[in-house]
Amino acid sequence: MKRLNDLELFGDFHLERDLINKSGTEANIFLISGYAAKISKEDAFSNNLLKDLVIPFKEYRIAREFFDGGVSVPEPKGLYAIKDNLGEVWPAFVMDYLNEDYININKLDKYGEALDLWFLELRKTEKFNYYMPDSRNKDNAMYSKKRRDVKLIDFRRYQKID
Image 1 (cartoon, rainbow, N blue to C red):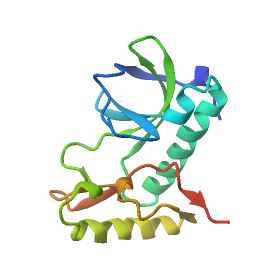
Image 2: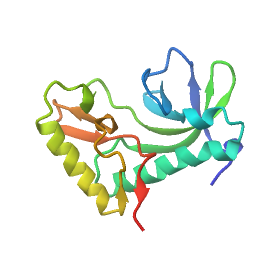
Image 3: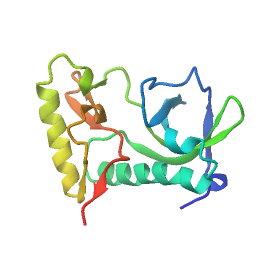
Image 4: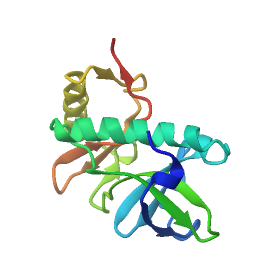
């Protein structure tokens, strides 16, 4: 695993203006150059730069494995350094941004097709020997009625089955 100083700088962001998940409990996600950049909240202020890389690296590795294996997830771009408007540099997991066509499944009035597609994607993850302990949490999936598609998001809680 790399150190923060070894990561390529992906871009700059503004702490308030570019925040796109105002209700995130475990991470902040910022929109940078058309991509979503995710910073872990629990590690962001730890002053332990090696620890700061563990969660984003895990998320990137799992998302890449899922994406390459045909699971519907935003395309992972990599692990990068991003710089905020105060000059601080943060490690971030960068992936494709899901536009306004996608809505969190929890916010739907009727689940219907969204749940069927979600369960299908969760089943696909099993072939990689992963399980999601909070798999009933619909916050971990986005649905596009227009595209008839569900994308899994938030890979930090996936556990490897031994």
